[in-house]
Image (cartoon, rainbow over all chains, first blue to last red; front, side, top):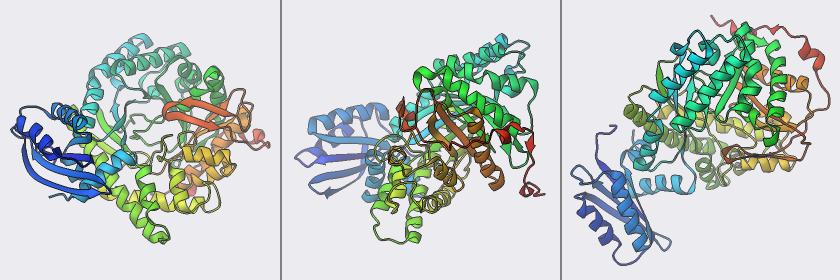
Length: 94
Length: 452
């Protein structure tokens, strides 16, 4: 299962406000990264949003994408991370 | 498909509970670097390490970014130097120690292990010279770590080596007296030393290992502690079950990182060491896990039983998570590197004797313990003898990393900084055993060594 997928998990944690999903989706779209799934939940008054996205046709590598998402997170006042899906699959699935 | 809860659980472990991969350690066989003189041997060692480990730090950082898992240390372990070069003088071994130090600096790793001799059954003349060089080598270098295996279940205890190590530890402390004897933090005396341990200061690349290998050490005391804190009143069977589940998840991370690193570096993957390794960071403490289980202060009665439960549950969970488990694989109880241990020692709850008892049920031994600077070499040797006896009889690894802090008395503090932390100086029994350790010779292997 190692290294076969190009899928990443984007997580957004922070205070809810207008435009978070739009902002993240915009960065992904500009880099030709396809969003496969979005889910979100509210923890206390904080938003926790998770996106699963496919980087197969991405114009940039994960390091560059992370930097762009990080910049967008600062703009929106939330924390945005992007990690290879294997980090989660390996922990929670055998 | 992963659920949002699973994803958030992983994020929380990393961001709030200090989950990390403690070390990616590249083991490199340097036996082929042997030449007729130490200078040439040193140059060949430098050339080989800087060639093979050139990408280690870069790949480690890359994985850290892509997978979002902090990898705290990237390190190198080499073939025990005693098996590589038969030196004729301490100067020979100093040249090699310096070559190792420079190679580590060149590739950007903070520690390199393998200034090592395996003398459980006796010394060769060259091994004796190497061991005698350790104080100077550790004072002259920044990154080199030394270890000496003085006992094994199969060989018994080399008491000549144990006595010598008492003196070597004292001299190492004196030569690094300006930094509270920090040289001793890079010197481990072992019984049953594992050949594939990725953790410093005791890592070396054993003679049974392949040319090059990637071993990984995981961590995660904070994750275990938080899981236990959520279960007030749960019985101990339930606690064990929870620790097992957490250890499984933590180990999977280590397995993933190890496999990706090995693949990218084009090197075989060796093992995951499923030790619980604390750091001085808040919440990253093994002592605090025991306290969360209901021990008032680490070291109080009940501590050994709680630690036995913890250690066993970690192994059971970890063993299911990885195809290859090895190294030390048990909970570490280093005093200076664990804020909870430091608090317990300062409060008088945790003594040297209790720590010794605890090492009978966990990894790895009397670790990062500061004792008064005037503790005699014979007493340090006797402490080593006690600790290795536990390892030899119980067929497990035990080790001693003890710092007789120059000029310090009981209750003073030593400060090493960084991951090595700080610790109160613990009292040592004022009764000695010098006649016992001076007898020398070899304590025979115990009856349980006759297993064939």
